[in-house]
Image (cartoon, rainbow, N blue to C red):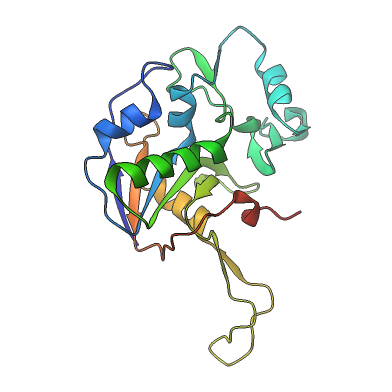
Amino acid sequence: MIVTAIKTIKIAAGSIGLTELLDAAITNLDEGVVVAITSKLVSLCETNIVPIGAIGKEQLIIQESNFYLPASFSKYGHHFTITNNTLIPMAGIDESNGAGHYVLWPKDAQKSANEVRHYLVERFGLNEVGVVITDSTCQPLRRGTTGIALAYSGFQALHDYVGSPDLFGRPFGVSQSKRGWRIGRRRCTGDGRRRRTNPSVHTLGADLRAVPAARSQLVRA
């Protein structure tokens, strides 16, 4: 898989629309490419922010999460939540690069992924193009962050190995590869965290098929 970072201008909340930003950042796109966009970029473009000080951070985390584990349960002071069927610290709320605001998760990441894919298909006349909305998270009991997919559009996010043989002919019983999350992790190798402005990447060689797909494939009920 080939990953290429896409550099954008520095933006503030509400200063530019997402498609307008992509117009300037992406000048050419080929068939078979997946465009991965950080969720913060989507949220800033749709002004899904809260001024720091307008509400207590813990209160905001509780408000944005479906399930909440208080920081007092962690010796490191971390707030773990389940938000939109995803285990994520602090309900995905971020203060970095928010210019005095808490940046929330996108209002509807799946809707944004579908709309960006439609825009790319129409603009470049493509059939096989995918979109992933990504974020970074941390794993309990491990240091460091990794990328995840909040939503995707235009490809099958799971590759099912169940029933296929391993190297010794034994059939797999449970293995499924998360393509959507794998692309999310790749984005973190060239992303726009800290002081960089590379919040989008495109990946080539993602075994793309021009099919509609819903994030529900990734969610275990």
